[in-house]
Length: 239
Length: 239
Image (cartoon, rainbow over all chains, first blue to last red; front, side, top):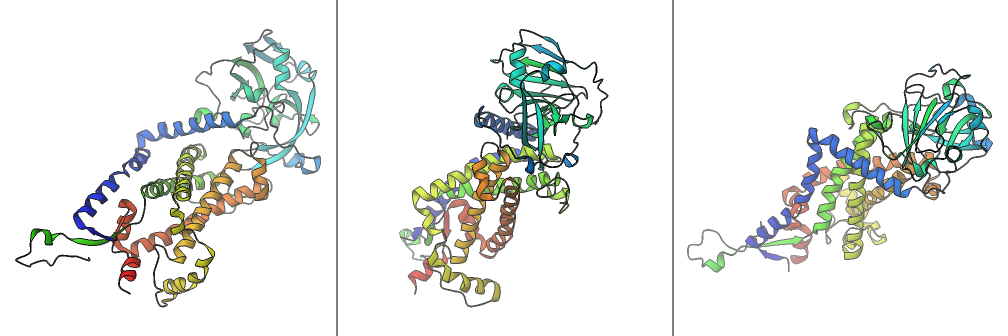
């Protein structure tokens, strides 16, 4: 019946209105000094979910040579300097952390590992992407060479241009995660990170650090998680 | 106001002063709760999404990049790309959560029958549109929602589903390549994601104007669930 006592309607209405109170919690996002903490939590929740969604053996799509953009159209995207002045002749990769054989590794040692060539999509956080041709050694093969404890949680890298990054171990062990020394069948040029960079088709582009100088296997991340991550980008950044 | 008691009658007995009003419980708690949660989420996602779009205001290839629109910063949220992504990655959970709760409630309760646009509503769309936009005669209302309302609400829910699915492809293209395929691929997912937002932005002004035109008791019903003197009931009882 559609007729109802006025007082009863008012009482019911008040009760129903109160039941909406939880929505007011969203108002916390309007408080300026709480905003960073709240959205930071949102990003951590998203990163946690991203870790769950990631499948270690699920490959990113690969493309035929016809789908690859011409080398001259592959953007140079540096955060700072497109040539940090690496001395290519004396360059070594320092390996440290939870590994049996820490020390300096030459480019020749990296190149002696099985070579992978793959045409994959490099997806930028800005919203563009480009399909490129990448060649290099699997990170997992280098981890094997240096006797890394792959039950560790993270692989971190440092770069000649003071960039730095860190990866979850699952992504480091992914078969398409490369220590890349070639693009388009030629040695990396300085703008693309010579002599060695990461190429991670399962991650956003900012994870694929250039000009690598050091690789560390670790169980904890310090205050420095990644150049952009420390300013607010998602840490997992898994695609 | 329909009122059962005659004010000012001196010999009115206490029991005769009970006021009876006509009212309908239109919006169950789940609908009101998700409506307001979703309103907040859509606002934040659109504003932060526009900030994200500013980082690459284009679709498709990076080079040659054709910037389409320069969205004024004042319309955006997050301050910079990283900040906007934090808001986006936080409110996507509220959006998806309220969407799932809404759809689950509608389907399980059968309440969707009041609002889902179905083929028999088609013939009622034009008379209603003519009434609203061309000052045509007002069609008789026999249901909670008129055919044009059903069309608008159903289309908006579809926009919500579309923005969720296209957003998932943009966020996790490596994990959900099969989802990108019916959208026309990764690049098209960005176009549809933007189009779905435009759908929301097209709906909201019309929605707000109609709310303003339909008065206080109609607005209150979205807070308390109860609507006084709904037109479709008075018509039914006094033919």
